[in-house]
Length: 151
Image (tube, rainbow, N blue to C red; front, side, top):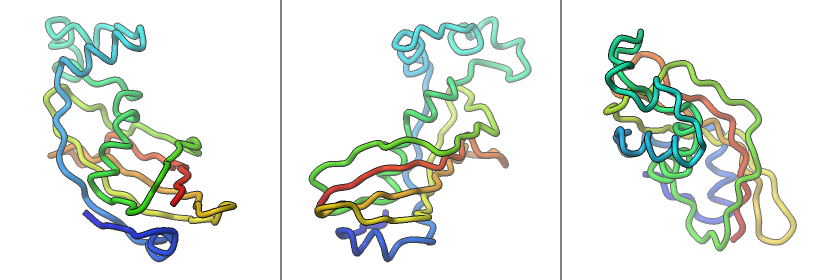
């Protein structure tokens, strides 16, 4: 894990790939809970028996579940020291090139592509986050994520 200290540390990391972070297992109970929380109970996510005959050979995580793991996965690849408050500002672009099969492990690498000073002691950070699936040639998710960190 790379530790970035303050606004200067974030600025110094622009253009560098950070990580990868720790592996994280996506299990069926997490997928089921996400389905309950989002009211998205499509069988490909929540019915292992039916999904076994799908092209994926089993249940897969929702793409938005993978996306929702970005804070956890990115925080295991890099840490911003001294942050008093962090805010999700949005996403510029998101793609899901490969499904995450239930039971798979994922991890992220983060490339900070831009850091813009904010009033006070803050910085708006644009990061390319790539979520890798263990053993897969294609990533699960590639997102351009915009956050704001205040120190």
